Amino acid sequence: MESISQKIAPDSQTGRRSGQIIKRGDDTWLVRIFTGLDAQGKRRYLNKTIKGKKKDAATYLNKTLSAIDTGTFVEPSPITVDEYLDKWLQTAARPRLRLRTYEYYVEMLKRYVRPVLGKKKLSDLRPLDIQALYTHMTAPKLKKGDVPQQGVIYGLGLSARTVRYGHIVLSSALKQAVKWMMLSQNPASLVGLPKPVRKEMQALSPKEAASFLNAAAEDRWGTLFSLALTTGMRPEEYLALQWKDVDLKKGVLTVQRAIAWHRKGGGFDFTAPKTAHSRRSIPLPASVVQALAAHKRQQAEERLKAGACYQNYDLVFAALEGTPLMIRNLVRRHFKPTLTRAKLPTSIRLYDLRHSCATLLLAAGENPKVVSERLGHAGVTLTLDVYSHVLPTMQEAASEKLEAILFG
Image 1: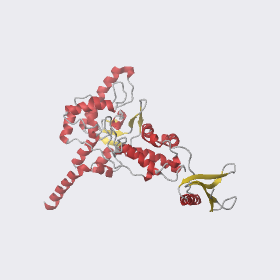
Image 2 (image 1 turned 135 degrees about the vertical axis):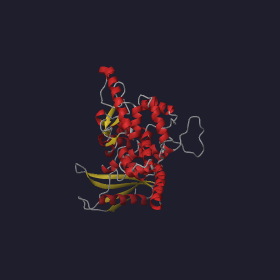
Image 3 (image 1 turned 45 degrees about the vertical axis):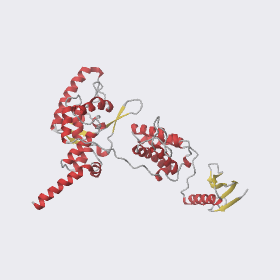
Image 4 (image 1 turned 90 degrees about the vertical axis):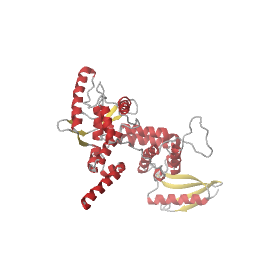
Protein backbone atom coordinates (compact mmCIF):
# COMPACT_ATOMS: atom_id res chain seq x y z
CA MET A 1 0.00 0.00 0.00
CA GLU A 2 1.41 3.35 -1.06
CA SER A 3 0.84 6.62 0.75
CA ILE A 4 2.15 10.16 0.71
CA SER A 5 1.69 12.93 3.27
CA GLN A 6 1.64 16.69 2.80
CA LYS A 7 2.42 18.89 5.79
CA ILE A 8 0.50 22.11 5.38
CA ALA A 9 -0.82 24.51 8.06
CA PRO A 10 -0.14 24.46 11.81
CA ASP A 11 -2.27 22.25 14.05
CA SER A 12 -3.10 23.07 17.68
CA GLN A 13 -1.68 19.75 18.89
CA THR A 14 1.16 18.86 16.54
CA GLY A 15 1.94 22.30 15.16
CA ARG A 16 1.54 20.84 11.65
CA ARG A 17 -1.54 19.86 9.63
CA SER A 18 -1.17 16.86 7.37
CA GLY A 19 -3.21 15.48 4.51
CA GLN A 20 -2.66 11.95 3.29
CA ILE A 21 -3.18 10.23 -0.03
CA ILE A 22 -3.52 6.47 0.41
CA LYS A 23 -3.70 4.05 -2.49
CA ARG A 24 -6.74 1.73 -2.28
CA GLY A 25 -6.52 -0.03 -5.61
CA ASP A 26 -5.99 0.56 -9.29
CA ASP A 27 -6.64 4.25 -9.91
CA THR A 28 -8.42 4.52 -6.53
CA TRP A 29 -7.12 6.81 -3.79
CA LEU A 30 -8.26 7.73 -0.31
CA VAL A 31 -7.63 11.35 0.65
CA ARG A 32 -7.59 11.81 4.44
CA ILE A 33 -7.55 15.31 5.92
CA PHE A 34 -7.60 16.46 9.53
CA THR A 35 -10.53 18.91 10.05
CA GLY A 36 -10.39 19.64 13.76
CA LEU A 37 -11.57 18.29 17.10
CA ASP A 38 -15.08 17.16 18.00
CA ALA A 39 -17.00 18.02 21.20
CA GLN A 40 -15.14 15.28 23.11
CA GLY A 41 -11.74 16.52 21.95
CA LYS A 42 -11.20 13.67 19.50
CA ARG A 43 -9.55 14.32 16.16
CA ARG A 44 -11.90 14.44 13.16
CA TYR A 45 -10.91 13.55 9.61
CA LEU A 46 -12.41 14.07 6.18
CA ASN A 47 -12.12 10.92 4.07
CA LYS A 48 -12.71 11.17 0.33
CA THR A 49 -12.26 8.42 -2.26
CA ILE A 50 -10.94 9.70 -5.60
CA LYS A 51 -11.16 7.68 -8.81
CA GLY A 52 -8.33 8.49 -11.24
CA LYS A 53 -4.64 9.22 -11.15
CA LYS A 54 -2.63 10.20 -8.11
CA LYS A 55 -2.40 13.77 -9.40
CA ASP A 56 -6.22 13.96 -9.28
CA ALA A 57 -6.13 13.00 -5.61
CA ALA A 58 -3.33 15.50 -5.00
CA THR A 59 -5.34 18.24 -6.71
CA TYR A 60 -8.32 17.53 -4.48
CA LEU A 61 -6.09 17.45 -1.38
CA ASN A 62 -4.43 20.79 -2.13
CA LYS A 63 -7.71 22.45 -3.06
CA THR A 64 -9.40 21.25 0.14
CA LEU A 65 -6.49 22.26 2.39
CA SER A 66 -6.46 25.68 0.75
CA ALA A 67 -10.20 26.05 1.41
CA ILE A 68 -9.66 25.09 5.06
CA ASP A 69 -6.89 27.67 5.41
CA THR A 70 -9.01 30.45 3.87
CA GLY A 71 -12.12 29.54 5.86
CA THR A 72 -14.18 28.65 2.78
CA PHE A 73 -14.24 24.90 3.33
CA VAL A 74 -17.64 23.27 3.81
CA GLU A 75 -17.62 19.76 5.21
CA PRO A 76 -19.71 17.44 3.00
CA SER A 77 -23.16 16.73 4.43
CA PRO A 78 -24.26 13.08 4.62
CA ILE A 79 -27.97 13.90 4.10
CA THR A 80 -29.78 13.35 0.81
CA VAL A 81 -31.42 16.02 -1.31
CA ASP A 82 -34.82 14.70 -0.18
CA GLU A 83 -33.87 15.03 3.50
CA TYR A 84 -32.50 18.51 2.96
CA LEU A 85 -35.60 19.70 1.08
CA ASP A 86 -37.78 18.48 3.94
CA LYS A 87 -35.75 20.58 6.39
CA TRP A 88 -35.69 23.61 4.09
CA LEU A 89 -39.43 23.56 3.45
CA GLN A 90 -40.25 23.30 7.13
CA THR A 91 -37.73 25.72 8.62
CA ALA A 92 -37.06 28.29 5.88
CA ALA A 93 -39.78 28.23 3.23
CA ARG A 94 -42.97 27.77 5.24
CA PRO A 95 -42.49 30.70 7.66
CA ARG A 96 -41.94 33.28 4.89
CA LEU A 97 -44.26 32.10 2.11
CA ARG A 98 -47.97 32.44 1.60
CA LEU A 99 -49.78 29.13 2.02
CA ARG A 100 -50.64 28.84 -1.67
CA THR A 101 -47.04 29.58 -2.69
CA TYR A 102 -45.74 27.08 -0.15
CA GLU A 103 -48.10 24.41 -1.49
CA TYR A 104 -46.91 25.22 -5.00
CA TYR A 105 -43.26 24.76 -3.90
CA VAL A 106 -44.08 21.41 -2.29
CA GLU A 107 -45.91 20.20 -5.40
CA MET A 108 -43.20 21.38 -7.79
CA LEU A 109 -40.47 19.57 -5.84
CA LYS A 110 -42.56 16.42 -5.40
CA ARG A 111 -43.54 16.16 -9.05
CA TYR A 112 -40.30 17.03 -10.84
CA VAL A 113 -37.22 17.41 -8.59
CA ARG A 114 -37.43 14.67 -5.99
CA PRO A 115 -37.96 11.71 -8.39
CA VAL A 116 -34.72 12.57 -10.20
CA LEU A 117 -32.44 14.14 -7.58
CA GLY A 118 -33.99 13.16 -4.25
CA LYS A 119 -31.81 10.12 -3.49
CA LYS A 120 -28.51 11.85 -4.27
CA LYS A 121 -26.38 13.14 -1.42
CA LEU A 122 -26.67 16.89 -1.12
CA SER A 123 -22.89 17.25 -1.12
CA ASP A 124 -22.66 15.24 -4.37
CA LEU A 125 -25.15 17.40 -6.26
CA ARG A 126 -23.51 18.95 -9.32
CA PRO A 127 -24.61 21.49 -11.95
CA LEU A 128 -24.61 18.69 -14.52
CA ASP A 129 -27.22 16.78 -12.48
CA ILE A 130 -29.51 19.80 -12.41
CA GLN A 131 -28.93 20.54 -16.09
CA ALA A 132 -29.89 16.96 -16.94
CA LEU A 133 -33.08 17.40 -14.90
CA TYR A 134 -34.07 20.53 -16.82
CA THR A 135 -33.31 18.82 -20.12
CA HIS A 136 -35.55 15.93 -19.11
CA MET A 137 -38.32 18.35 -18.19
CA THR A 138 -38.25 20.20 -21.51
CA ALA A 139 -37.63 17.22 -23.84
CA PRO A 140 -40.70 16.27 -25.91
CA LYS A 141 -43.07 13.77 -24.35
CA LEU A 142 -43.67 10.48 -26.12
CA LYS A 143 -47.41 10.28 -26.58
CA LYS A 144 -49.31 7.05 -26.23
CA GLY A 145 -49.27 5.11 -29.49
CA ASP A 146 -46.40 7.10 -31.01
CA VAL A 147 -43.32 5.29 -32.29
CA PRO A 148 -40.07 6.60 -30.75
CA GLN A 149 -37.81 8.26 -33.31
CA GLN A 150 -34.20 7.24 -33.40
CA GLY A 151 -31.87 9.79 -31.87
CA VAL A 152 -34.67 11.74 -30.18
CA ILE A 153 -34.50 12.17 -26.40
CA TYR A 154 -37.91 12.11 -24.76
CA GLY A 155 -38.93 13.64 -21.47
CA LEU A 156 -41.87 15.40 -19.84
CA GLY A 157 -42.58 17.96 -22.55
CA LEU A 158 -42.96 20.86 -20.10
CA SER A 159 -42.90 24.52 -21.05
CA ALA A 160 -39.93 26.79 -20.47
CA ARG A 161 -42.09 28.70 -18.00
CA THR A 162 -42.61 25.60 -15.83
CA VAL A 163 -38.90 24.76 -15.89
CA ARG A 164 -37.95 28.30 -14.92
CA TYR A 165 -40.43 28.23 -12.03
CA GLY A 166 -38.98 24.90 -10.90
CA HIS A 167 -35.52 26.44 -11.06
CA ILE A 168 -36.61 29.30 -8.81
CA VAL A 169 -37.75 26.81 -6.17
CA LEU A 170 -34.71 24.54 -6.35
CA SER A 171 -32.20 27.38 -6.55
CA SER A 172 -33.79 29.08 -3.55
CA ALA A 173 -33.44 25.87 -1.53
CA LEU A 174 -29.79 25.37 -2.51
CA LYS A 175 -28.96 29.03 -1.90
CA GLN A 176 -30.11 28.51 1.67
CA ALA A 177 -27.87 25.42 1.92
CA VAL A 178 -24.89 27.68 1.15
CA LYS A 179 -25.95 30.06 3.93
CA TRP A 180 -26.25 27.12 6.30
CA MET A 181 -22.69 26.04 5.38
CA MET A 182 -23.92 22.76 3.89
CA LEU A 183 -22.69 23.60 0.38
CA SER A 184 -19.77 25.74 -0.71
CA GLN A 185 -21.71 27.11 -3.67
CA ASN A 186 -25.14 26.86 -5.26
CA PRO A 187 -24.92 24.34 -8.15
CA ALA A 188 -28.22 25.59 -9.59
CA SER A 189 -26.63 28.99 -10.27
CA LEU A 190 -24.32 27.41 -12.85
CA VAL A 191 -26.89 25.85 -15.19
CA GLY A 192 -28.51 27.14 -18.35
CA LEU A 193 -32.25 27.76 -18.51
CA PRO A 194 -34.61 27.53 -21.48
CA LYS A 195 -35.47 30.90 -22.96
CA PRO A 196 -38.76 32.25 -21.64
CA VAL A 197 -41.59 32.27 -24.12
CA ARG A 198 -43.92 35.11 -23.29
CA LYS A 199 -47.51 34.00 -23.73
CA GLU A 200 -49.12 36.22 -26.32
CA MET A 201 -51.66 38.40 -24.60
CA GLN A 202 -54.97 39.24 -26.21
CA ALA A 203 -56.31 42.74 -25.77
CA LEU A 204 -59.74 43.94 -26.84
CA SER A 205 -59.98 46.77 -29.33
CA PRO A 206 -62.33 49.67 -28.50
CA LYS A 207 -65.01 48.13 -30.72
CA GLU A 208 -64.54 44.65 -29.19
CA ALA A 209 -64.58 46.10 -25.68
CA ALA A 210 -67.90 47.80 -26.39
CA SER A 211 -69.35 44.55 -27.75
CA PHE A 212 -68.10 42.69 -24.68
CA LEU A 213 -69.69 45.17 -22.26
CA ASN A 214 -73.01 45.03 -24.15
CA ALA A 215 -73.00 41.24 -23.90
CA ALA A 216 -71.90 41.38 -20.25
CA ALA A 217 -74.93 43.50 -19.37
CA GLU A 218 -77.06 40.37 -19.84
CA ASP A 219 -75.00 38.37 -17.35
CA ARG A 220 -75.38 38.20 -13.57
CA TRP A 221 -71.74 39.28 -13.23
CA GLY A 222 -71.79 42.01 -15.86
CA THR A 223 -70.80 44.59 -13.25
CA LEU A 224 -67.80 42.49 -12.27
CA PHE A 225 -66.63 42.30 -15.89
CA SER A 226 -67.10 46.06 -16.32
CA LEU A 227 -65.05 46.71 -13.19
CA ALA A 228 -62.30 44.35 -14.35
CA LEU A 229 -62.07 46.01 -17.77
CA THR A 230 -62.08 49.60 -16.50
CA THR A 231 -59.80 49.22 -13.47
CA GLY A 232 -57.20 46.72 -14.75
CA MET A 233 -57.38 44.89 -11.40
CA ARG A 234 -56.14 41.33 -11.12
CA PRO A 235 -58.86 38.67 -10.68
CA GLU A 236 -57.58 37.79 -7.21
CA GLU A 237 -57.93 41.47 -6.28
CA TYR A 238 -61.51 42.17 -7.40
CA LEU A 239 -62.71 38.79 -6.06
CA ALA A 240 -61.39 39.89 -2.63
CA LEU A 241 -62.86 43.40 -2.89
CA GLN A 242 -65.05 44.35 0.06
CA TRP A 243 -67.68 47.07 0.26
CA LYS A 244 -65.64 48.93 2.86
CA ASP A 245 -63.01 49.37 0.11
CA VAL A 246 -65.49 51.12 -2.20
CA ASP A 247 -66.53 54.76 -1.83
CA LEU A 248 -69.51 55.13 -4.14
CA LYS A 249 -69.89 58.85 -3.33
CA LYS A 250 -66.35 59.69 -4.40
CA GLY A 251 -66.29 57.01 -7.10
CA VAL A 252 -63.04 55.44 -5.83
CA LEU A 253 -62.06 51.96 -4.70
CA THR A 254 -58.96 50.86 -2.81
CA VAL A 255 -57.12 47.60 -3.39
CA GLN A 256 -56.31 46.24 0.08
CA ARG A 257 -56.09 42.46 -0.30
CA ALA A 258 -56.15 39.46 -2.62
CA ILE A 259 -57.78 36.06 -2.36
CA ALA A 260 -55.76 32.85 -2.41
CA TRP A 261 -57.45 29.49 -2.88
CA HIS A 262 -55.77 26.50 -1.24
CA ARG A 263 -54.43 23.89 -3.64
CA LYS A 264 -55.47 21.06 -1.35
CA GLY A 265 -58.54 20.58 0.78
CA GLY A 266 -60.39 23.64 -0.54
CA GLY A 267 -60.76 26.78 1.46
CA PHE A 268 -59.28 30.23 0.93
CA ASP A 269 -57.37 33.02 2.61
CA PHE A 270 -57.37 36.77 2.24
CA THR A 271 -53.76 37.81 1.77
CA ALA A 272 -51.78 40.95 1.11
CA PRO A 273 -51.76 42.09 -2.53
CA LYS A 274 -49.05 40.80 -4.85
CA THR A 275 -46.59 43.65 -4.20
CA ALA A 276 -46.40 46.81 -2.13
CA HIS A 277 -47.36 48.82 -5.24
CA SER A 278 -50.49 46.68 -5.61
CA ARG A 279 -52.06 48.59 -2.71
CA ARG A 280 -53.61 51.46 -4.62
CA SER A 281 -56.66 53.66 -5.08
CA ILE A 282 -58.45 53.58 -8.44
CA PRO A 283 -60.98 56.18 -9.62
CA LEU A 284 -64.03 54.61 -11.25
CA PRO A 285 -65.95 55.67 -14.37
CA ALA A 286 -69.41 57.07 -13.54
CA SER A 287 -71.13 54.18 -15.36
CA VAL A 288 -69.31 51.63 -13.21
CA VAL A 289 -70.24 53.53 -10.02
CA GLN A 290 -73.91 53.40 -11.03
CA ALA A 291 -73.64 49.70 -11.85
CA LEU A 292 -72.02 49.00 -8.47
CA ALA A 293 -74.79 50.87 -6.63
CA ALA A 294 -77.45 48.80 -8.43
CA HIS A 295 -75.47 45.62 -7.75
CA LYS A 296 -75.27 46.47 -4.04
CA ARG A 297 -79.05 46.84 -3.82
CA GLN A 298 -79.58 43.51 -5.57
CA GLN A 299 -77.06 41.82 -3.30
CA ALA A 300 -78.89 43.16 -0.21
CA GLU A 301 -82.13 41.57 -1.44
CA GLU A 302 -80.39 38.23 -2.02
CA ARG A 303 -78.85 38.39 1.45
CA LEU A 304 -82.27 38.87 3.04
CA LYS A 305 -83.63 35.85 1.16
CA ALA A 306 -80.66 33.71 2.26
CA GLY A 307 -81.21 34.63 5.90
CA ALA A 308 -79.03 32.77 8.41
CA CYS A 309 -77.41 30.74 5.63
CA TYR A 310 -75.59 33.84 4.35
CA GLN A 311 -71.90 34.04 5.28
CA ASN A 312 -71.04 37.70 5.44
CA TYR A 313 -67.50 38.43 4.24
CA ASP A 314 -68.60 41.92 3.07
CA LEU A 315 -67.59 40.91 -0.46
CA VAL A 316 -68.62 43.05 -3.39
CA PHE A 317 -68.85 39.97 -5.59
CA ALA A 318 -70.05 36.90 -3.70
CA ALA A 319 -72.01 33.74 -4.33
CA LEU A 320 -75.63 33.54 -3.16
CA GLU A 321 -74.48 32.24 0.23
CA GLY A 322 -71.95 35.08 0.63
CA THR A 323 -68.80 33.05 -0.07
CA PRO A 324 -66.13 34.16 -2.57
CA LEU A 325 -66.54 33.34 -6.24
CA MET A 326 -64.29 30.67 -7.70
CA ILE A 327 -62.47 31.81 -10.83
CA ARG A 328 -62.95 28.47 -12.59
CA ASN A 329 -66.75 28.62 -12.22
CA LEU A 330 -66.85 32.32 -13.09
CA VAL A 331 -64.98 31.70 -16.33
CA ARG A 332 -66.90 28.58 -17.39
CA ARG A 333 -70.42 29.71 -16.51
CA HIS A 334 -70.28 33.43 -17.19
CA PHE A 335 -67.13 34.78 -18.89
CA LYS A 336 -66.94 32.34 -21.81
CA PRO A 337 -70.69 32.58 -22.57
CA THR A 338 -70.33 36.38 -22.57
CA LEU A 339 -67.53 36.16 -25.12
CA THR A 340 -69.69 33.91 -27.26
CA ARG A 341 -72.62 36.36 -27.18
CA ALA A 342 -70.23 39.18 -28.10
CA LYS A 343 -68.90 37.04 -30.99
CA LEU A 344 -65.37 37.26 -29.59
CA PRO A 345 -62.75 34.45 -29.52
CA THR A 346 -63.22 32.17 -26.52
CA SER A 347 -59.43 31.94 -26.30
CA ILE A 348 -59.53 35.32 -24.54
CA ARG A 349 -58.74 34.85 -20.84
CA LEU A 350 -60.30 36.57 -17.86
CA TYR A 351 -56.87 38.07 -17.13
CA ASP A 352 -56.90 39.63 -20.61
CA LEU A 353 -59.41 42.18 -19.35
CA ARG A 354 -56.51 43.64 -17.35
CA HIS A 355 -54.34 43.69 -20.47
CA SER A 356 -57.19 45.29 -22.41
CA CYS A 357 -57.51 48.08 -19.86
CA ALA A 358 -53.82 48.95 -20.14
CA THR A 359 -53.74 48.67 -23.93
CA LEU A 360 -56.84 50.82 -24.44
CA LEU A 361 -55.46 53.56 -22.18
CA LEU A 362 -51.99 53.59 -23.73
CA ALA A 363 -53.38 53.54 -27.26
CA ALA A 364 -55.57 56.50 -26.32
CA GLY A 365 -52.47 58.45 -25.32
CA GLU A 366 -52.74 58.13 -21.54
CA ASN A 367 -49.53 58.78 -19.62
CA PRO A 368 -47.75 55.41 -19.01
CA LYS A 369 -47.09 56.47 -15.41
CA VAL A 370 -50.84 56.77 -14.81
CA VAL A 371 -51.46 53.38 -16.41
CA SER A 372 -48.67 51.84 -14.32
CA GLU A 373 -50.22 53.13 -11.09
CA ARG A 374 -53.67 51.91 -12.12
CA LEU A 375 -52.33 48.39 -12.71
CA GLY A 376 -50.27 48.37 -9.53
CA HIS A 377 -46.99 47.78 -11.32
CA ALA A 378 -43.72 48.29 -9.47
CA GLY A 379 -42.69 50.95 -11.99
CA VAL A 380 -43.43 52.45 -15.37
CA THR A 381 -40.56 50.48 -16.93
CA LEU A 382 -42.44 47.23 -16.31
CA THR A 383 -45.59 48.67 -17.88
CA LEU A 384 -43.77 49.81 -21.01
CA ASP A 385 -41.99 46.46 -21.29
CA VAL A 386 -45.17 44.40 -20.99
CA TYR A 387 -47.18 46.64 -23.32
CA SER A 388 -44.45 47.47 -25.81
CA HIS A 389 -46.78 46.37 -28.62
CA VAL A 390 -48.71 49.62 -28.14
CA LEU A 391 -45.64 51.84 -28.48
CA PRO A 392 -45.40 51.90 -32.30
CA THR A 393 -48.84 53.55 -32.49
CA MET A 394 -47.83 56.02 -29.78
CA GLN A 395 -44.64 56.87 -31.68
CA GLU A 396 -46.65 57.58 -34.84
CA ALA A 397 -48.90 59.92 -32.89
CA ALA A 398 -45.82 61.62 -31.42
CA SER A 399 -44.44 62.21 -34.93
CA GLU A 400 -47.72 63.76 -36.03
CA LYS A 401 -47.64 66.10 -33.02
CA LEU A 402 -44.08 67.17 -33.85
CA GLU A 403 -45.11 67.80 -37.43
CA ALA A 404 -47.89 70.09 -36.27
CA ILE A 405 -45.72 71.88 -33.71
CA LEU A 406 -42.59 72.41 -35.81
CA PHE A 407 -43.84 72.61 -39.38
CA GLY A 408 -47.33 73.96 -38.95
